[in-house]
Length: 306
Image (tube, rainbow, N blue to C red):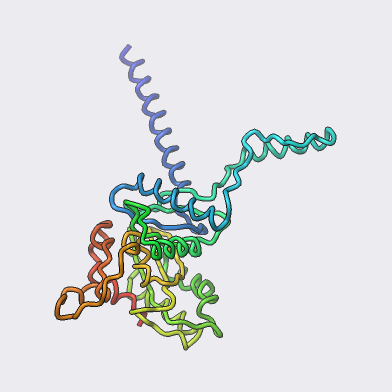
């Protein structure tokens, strides 16, 4: 009896381990990967609620810009009569093939690879235009539409998070905005999470070098740039976008953008403001994850692209 019980326990342990490994593989397929587009969303300790809020907000504005989402017919039915047997068979085969293929929704929530950061994968849309429209509306209406979402950063390009891969990818990616005859003032907003192999200063200098080669008329402007190059590294994936109104829309922070703009105050009245991004302290820097807190006091000088 004891030998049988031992064998039974071994078999149960093997089944448990196998199931555990399968779970890891399944989770891996739902993570941020190179080649995706979407939105990085930061929050404060409540990722489930943040995901729900983000999907509601994104769907609301996506319907305005792109119309209602067209979902596949689950029953595969058709209102039209079949012309003949061959047509009916072909449609049945197509339906069977479609049922074995994962249907991609307009928005899909994935693991980002970092705490308090979620990634919403997008399909058939331009995430930068969608997020800019949301922030424009929030800035104009001053109507708060979320409680736990902090920043919404579009991701229009991804590559491996190694300096040589990033330089190669960005050389082509940045052309629509910065290659002659196009030019603009810009700044670089770089952030790395769960990644230590990239040196911040080296990455920023490399990107600034690319922009300078595309057109020497491109100039750095830390105060009010026309364009901001957002580079967010999470583990082995580098997420990139070029956005407008980054300063006006409070670093794309949906909590801050709905606040009324405060009138400029004399420097002598508020000396502490000199420590934070031109007098506007981003609350995300003090409420997001530990990585944000460590870098909040020197984030702006690092974006110089010297």
